[in-house]
Image (cartoon, rainbow, N blue to C red; front, side, top):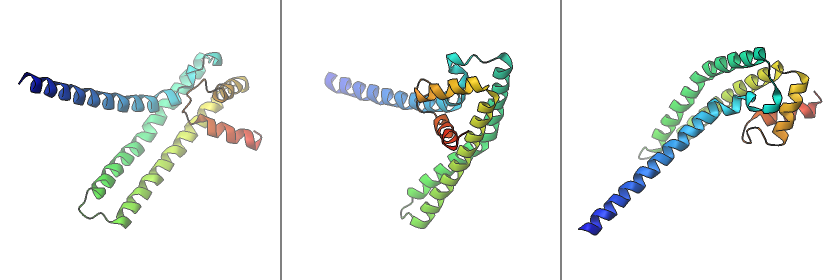
Length: 159
């Protein structure tokens, strides 16, 4: 009897820890996407002025308001896609169409993110832009962020 209760308690503990780990990972993803990727002020050598910080903060707030409906739409479409997969006999054409709509919504979201990054980059002085580019190249600033591709493309075009 004692052995069974210890095993049961162990299983419950493992399930609880797995659930907490998953929830923490999801929370970290949401925090990262809402702050660190779009928070250029974390670069210590940037030396932003108070006016620049305020302008970037306002841009960030309007950006989040701008993308919220798109994020909700993508979430709803993902749930609908999951429901299509869970049907007894999933229809390939319907699933592919739904997935294509999700990809199109993600592209619109990425376009808005690019617009935001370029707007923030436009606020910086040429010296600060060099600091940001250098930090991205050295991977000191947000190794997984999306700023790098836009800046690399800009460098290739000669801007």
